Length: 187
Image 1 (cartoon, rainbow, N blue to C red):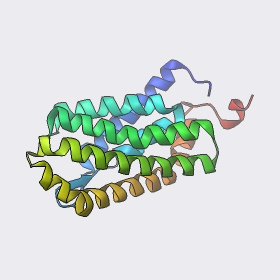
Image 2: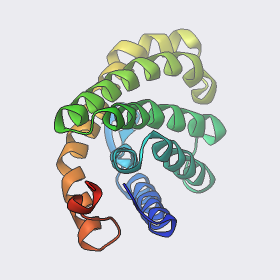
Image 3: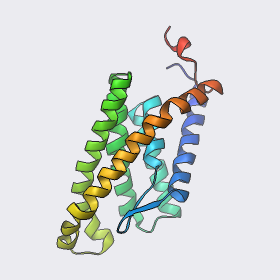
Image 4: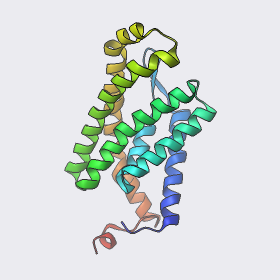
């Protein structure tokens, strides 16, 4: 994709702002104290457009701003957000970058979903006791009844919503001349 640095930074900035707004205003309680927010959808769309490093950058920026403004979990929550977001979005973007077809997008999103579930089960076991103030045994008892279903639902929502929004967002960016049309990219 041949796009100017200014346009790319503009798009990434818009995606960061949208992802932050999704976290600030879009939280939905799901299981016990766990809340879903759709920021990973926006981060993943950035990665599908520009690659996995863009997903990483947006995740770090949004998670850091979230930590400094609205988070109650501090640096550990920020680290968990970065790990969670990157395990989903970077995986999906990496696979889609290798196979830029619908099947590549679906495979990437499914692999991102699976990766996020596995990674977050491990990190919830390791880190959650520290920032929650619970003994590790209490957190271990929550892994299957709370954390696993939450991460399965979260990943499924992220993958589904990303599939629904990716094409319209790219079409809007092309229509607003922030991205070149598909015909120009094939040269």
